[in-house]
Amino acid sequence: MMCEWMNTCKGNKGITGSITFLLILLFTLQLAENVTSALIQSVRMEMTGEVVSCSSQNIYPAPEVAWSTDPLSGPETLQNSTVKTPDSKGLYIVESRVRILGNVFDYAYFCSVISADKAQVWTTSIKKTEELIGEAGRELSIPCIAPQNLQNFSLTWTFTRTNDPTVILSYDNRTRRTSNLWEGRAGLEQDQVLMSKGSLLLHNPESEKHSGTYTCTFTGFQRRHMVQNQVNITARRPTAGVTNVMADHMLWMIPAVSAILWQSLWNYIH
Image (cartoon, rainbow, N blue to C red; front, side, top):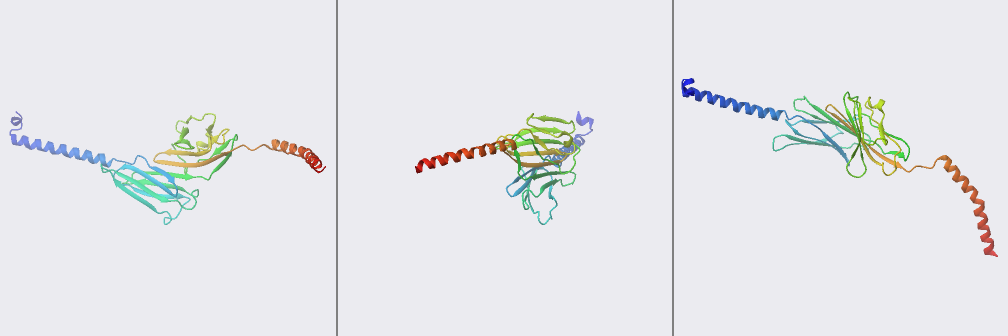
């Protein structure tokens, strides 16, 4: 019947072949679209020893990687080593690293992963600060400033003392909502966080319990910035009043101790 409708079976076979070709072509184009739409989803960055590393995966085509620092350093001093490896699906894993320049606290490091068509630029940065000394029982402000004003961002603070980091709090500037797991022990300065300044206030910290690494992370559109703060909470020092009382007590004891020593020496001689 199909042959009658198409007049000849030959014509029917020709159209059937054309339809099959079109289906194969559409399927091929769909596969190509799936591959070319393997966009950058995230960029991971960490600082270990004398190296800063940056990585991303499941990308096609292979992206480019660019490094920079704040304050700026010459391109000849910031030499990077980048490896791009395709996986079994043809998607790329990108790993790049640079050596730390000078003192580990001198620079913030920026790694940008750029798609082949330049339509996407994902930038992640990391900064390590010098050790911050606090005193048990005294409020302490741990600084965290984003490298530039972010319009829409989330802020997360984590604490690491021995093993895995634990979340302290998170903040979303679009909703202005804070989820605080350390309620009563830590908080944000609300007027400052709107200006991309997310300093953490520790209330009544304890020396051993609250000493460790505090990391703040700003996350915006294709942007991520981390600041690592090493905090050491020392035991509380005596106040001036207590110190004066102890000094007066010691002065009062001196004549008594001297009298006892002289009496002992007199008894020994006689």
